[in-house]
Image (cartoon, rainbow over all chains, first blue to last red; front, side, top):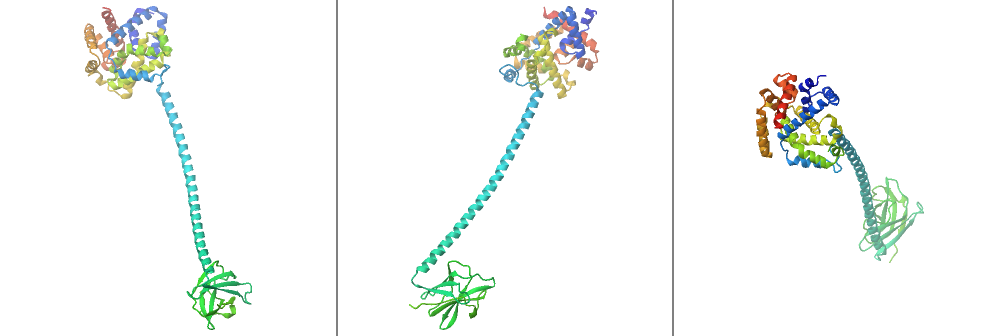
Length: 261
Length: 171
């Protein structure tokens, strides 16, 4: 190999500039190890080039160095490794984060739905309790009222015992002769079909007077129609629902005489 | 020095930067012709030098040559990705460099004047090649293609030009 020809082709300058293909570069490197003259010439070229480039130097803004030194970690290894690894890491982190957020979203939605169901249940229960309380309150009011009537001496109690038609039946009437109020209390009377109702009668001057209808399954006092003075007997018959102007006496269930006094 | 670099001692990076960032930034800027892009490329270049220092082989040349080639390749890659028009390359680089020099430092003006004098002492053909390769950011192949000069001729003219400069620089 003619070394001076090789050198004067300018291939070493091209090598120093970085203008060679991989194959050409490998060839130069091989020759360099073989021929010290080539190695020495390259060094001279590199020196000249470096001097030239240093003369052409433009100082970059200080911020570049600050950023560079920051992006190199404290142990020295650069934090920003290579763009691909960084990209892969970011992508993996994003996917993980997305999955994690997805899980959280699912989990919270699930919990929210459960909470919603539980809340609905509780609200329903609460409403139920309120209704029960209301009902109990109404019953209590009614019972207090009933008790007041039962204990009121101005009310006369008339016990109506079962007739031959219904020997087991028993009911009472509380009648205030002054205010004409009439209340009925069922102790024991069988339930009737939907078409039938009991009807209370007051016998005044031998004539039956309508005192209102009632059903057989009511507890507590039933407020009946007003009855004026002069009733001597109260009796109950079974009539068509809604009642009738004159009693069907054959169906009489209970009857009781008003005690004098 | 190189051992310190290979051990990833941060103070060596500091040293490298202080000594070579100006020369490398100049090379990058002449290729990409945009200050913002040039600064990005410079940072990328030093990171790459730092991370790939194990790939540097002292038997294959000086550290600066290796750094220069790493840097220059990054800059050239950037112009490819940005599709920078090569036609424009010949136009306004002197103006740009002068403007930057005025912003950054005044002393390099003196150097630039000295350099111009040096370049003026080269034969026209050599000066043209050196000017395009080192001041206007062309590669040898680009120069050959653009001005229709055989690549072999570009290489010999580069050699002659650098040879002349070596003599001048050595005084």
